[in-house]
Image (cartoon, rainbow, N blue to C red; front, side):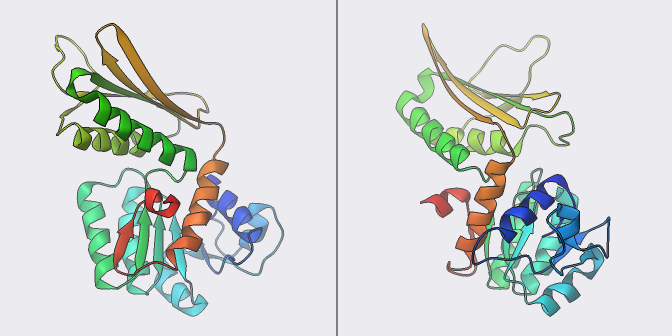
Length: 259
């Protein structure tokens, strides 16, 4: 676990330690180094101290880790994920804000080091279903319908639009033959054939995503609301168990895990 002392990290530690066949072998963070990660997560000592991220390579090799789980920030993931790959460790990456270049670089490390990876902007089973429904709707409705995407998250989220919003926009664009993206609108901006993407930030919203397919005289909305981060935790643990059994040198998506 990288970012093990954060909100998602501690939830993942709890879930992993209560799941048969998987255990926390190493934990990394920039804070609370040296403390037992079980104490940090509130489940009591498990005999795994929090290590400084700068010791990632050394600890991964000593602990004989099978899977690296990363829900941190993009600038940390682009440094740490390649190190894990070079150590022969499979990757589960849920970090959002990664650029296309970042993903290409990580994919190259996965292939070169013959490990398997799941890289997904969202590990919710419900969101995977939501994306499939949006793809089906885009294919059925075609270019006669305008598409707008609205996402809402808590006021501490650093990146916008969300990774999930961008993923679903890319899915719909591909299904409709290619669309430009417009991020919010201001001033004189007549609508073209783009997909509009809008971000809302406030309070403690876990994650809401709405896709609107808007035609003449009717509108279809596909919506997903996350009530708790537990949905992401469960999906990430499922992916961690799944990825170890898959063909190496390949980057998978959450849709592959659920196929």
